[in-house]
Image 1 (tube, rainbow, N blue to C red):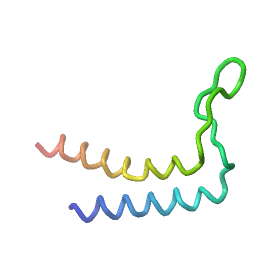
Image 2 (spheres, rainbow, N blue to C red):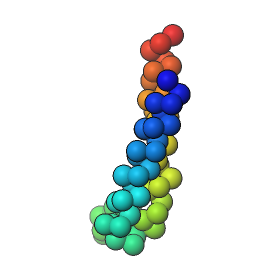
Image 3 (cartoon, helix red, strand yellow):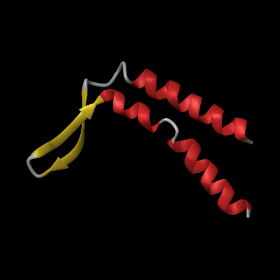
Length: 65
């Protein structure tokens, strides 16, 4: 079961890494009335690679008990 979450993390990382070639250098993350207020570098999305695996693990653990 642990191997499953590692595979999910690697697949997500590969997809996000491929997206970095398509995205602009800065991605707006906050929008206000006057438009985009804050932007981050496109490589910040790579930090979110383990999120799907962590959420899947947490949900599986919750409903298994």
